[in-house]
View 1 (cartoon, rainbow, N blue to C red):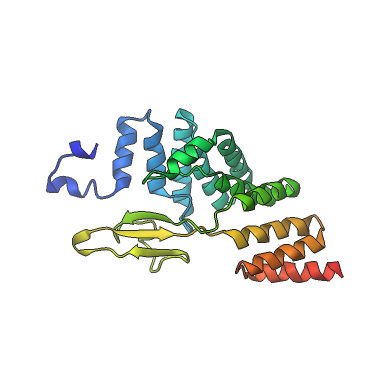
View 2 (view 1 turned 30 degrees about the vertical axis):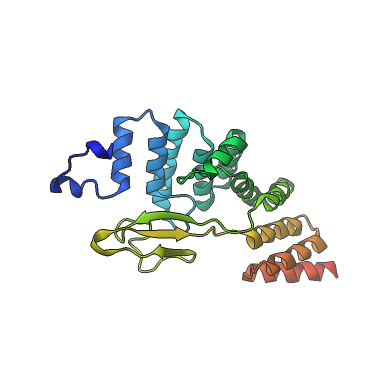
Length: 253
């Protein structure tokens, strides 16, 4: 599509970012679910932290259009991530369950070998589902999902990275980048884009802490205390961890 765009100084400002390109694609070929998905990702990538709520809601609307055309696992994962971040846990659980239905081990393997990878990993789904089920107070289901998540979780954190200029990335209107977001490659001269990356906001220690919370809610005090110890061993050190840990030890007697 970009090949056919008028190549003149008059068109530079209009096509200044991928967002305008993908919006145009949805207007020209609205039947293509990938255009809607890519447009949603340019509005707000669900894997990135501290995004504006309005942008997330715009992205969800575009993802729903993609889903209506072709229900794909990566569309469902993005829906789950946005609903989770918005505190809409029932909708998040529904999206994660859709992702489980559309998950394919073959597609996950094929995508992992490509330069441009579409999120399709089962661990993303089970981790998200377990956390949303916890917030729905479905503790036994949450424990099952989170324990499966922990078994599937890669040892190393996978970073999400995009090429961006200073003026058109997700946090361009902020004075500093959120925690866990950094320039892997700085922006170059003459507008050459840099590489902006983000790490997952909840990883192994965080998942272990959620399992501890589930045990605590189920009044399984020794299990809760043990999981708090495991989460701490994985460098998770939030104030909430120590409060739950202390309360579980007190109840254990």
